Image (cartoon, rainbow, N blue to C red; front, side):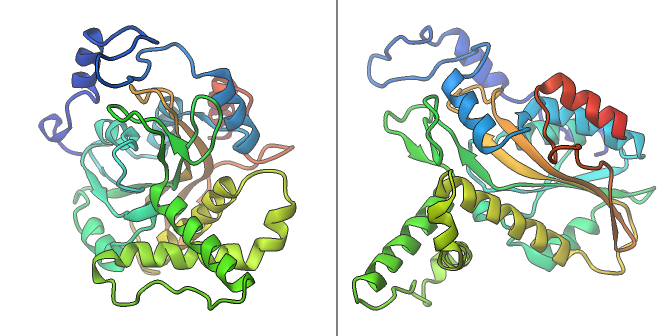
Length: 318
């Protein structure tokens, strides 16, 4: 939004420069294992897992370019639009840098797991920063989940770290706590509750409560479905994030608000050009009415087979 001087520099420029001096893919770092750089595609096992758990997910850069084109047709541009995100602050979610490079400064509404912890106060501040002339707001909201090269969900390899790490760490930690609590209860012990006086970790207490309630209420069905808990919990978090985003917007807010909602899928690749987004909602909200820009596909919502059909489908429905 506004002048070019306020926009970030080209995302990942330093990373690309460093890549030129990095070892070739598959080579060993003298001290630590490093990841592949500048590869042409993700590992087939990773892509298979994405297609299985998140059918219709497309490369994040394709989603960014396509949604930019669509919202411009509805009057949104980098001069009249202020951008905000509600995503987990994990550093691997650097697609937000690309959104910011496209739309301008990013007002961060999100906290752990992507929930909009800044609440109504945060939205109030965000909305009062929009441009005076035809000012509009655009919000991207999403939980995130990692998928490793060999297709494991809830995990990811990070640069400079030899061990596999969790993603989303907040979500996985909440899951583990909920399962441990259920295990205690099943064995005749008392249900474990997080410490209510943990002032330094209030966001995680909220995430844990949401995840724990979801697992407890759906344990029977979760045990029967073909899939995994990491995926199902992430999908549930998306629903909660969307609910909270819509809840913090005042009923009498009149300026147009563009909403892009989905699930951000992180992969192992260090340049992050192979992260994916499953788009669940693209809306324009004006005067307390949210209007979907696109209708579901005939077979299932956002069931696109590749980036080309995704772009064509969005273009046809715009």
